[in-house]
Image (tube, rainbow, N blue to C red; front, side, top):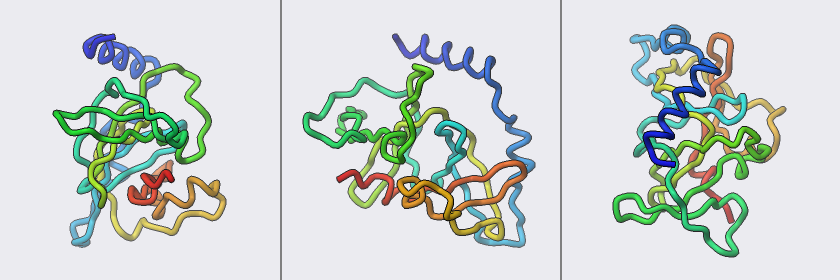
Amino acid sequence: MNEEEMLARGKERRAENPEPSLETDRRVSISDRRFENNRQYATFYLDDHFLGIEIEQVQEVFLSKEMTSVPKSPASVAGLINLRGQIIMSIDLRKRLGFKENSTGEAPMSIVVRTSDGPVNLLVDQIGDVIRVRPDLFELPPKTLEQQLGMAIEGVYKLEGKLLLALNTECAVQVA
C-alpha cells in the first residue's frame, strides 16, 4: 500500500469515527497568559486513552514506514526504520505500555521523539493535535493506572471531558 492509499484510508477512518474537533480541543485546553510556564503537548491515542508528549521532545510525525525486524529483541521492539539515512528503533507503544493488540488492523502512526540515547520511533494508534495546557491543571498520575502504563506517565492534566496522560518518553523507551 503506497502513502496516498494510506492517507485516503486515514481520511475514511476519520469520517467514520470523528474525533473531537480542533475547536473543542482548543477550547478545553486554552492556555492562560498569566502563567509563563504553559506547556504544549503533541497528543495521540492508544485505544481510548488520550496521551501527550511535550512538543520539545517530538522530532516528527508520519505514517508508519516499512520496518526491519530485530531477531531476539523484546516484544515491544517493532523493528528498525531508515529515516533519511538514520537507523531508528521503533517501539510498539501498545505492547510497551501493556495494551492489548490493535484489533482494527489499521496501520499505526509514528512519532519520532528525541531521547538521551538519540531518536526513537513510537508507534501509536492515532495522532491528535498540539494543545497548550495550564500548569494548574497538572496532577500526579492516579494510582488506579495499570502498573506498566503508570510507570511511564509523569502525570495527568484534567481537561474538560477527558484526561491528558503526560508520557515520560525516557521511561517509555526503556525496553530491556
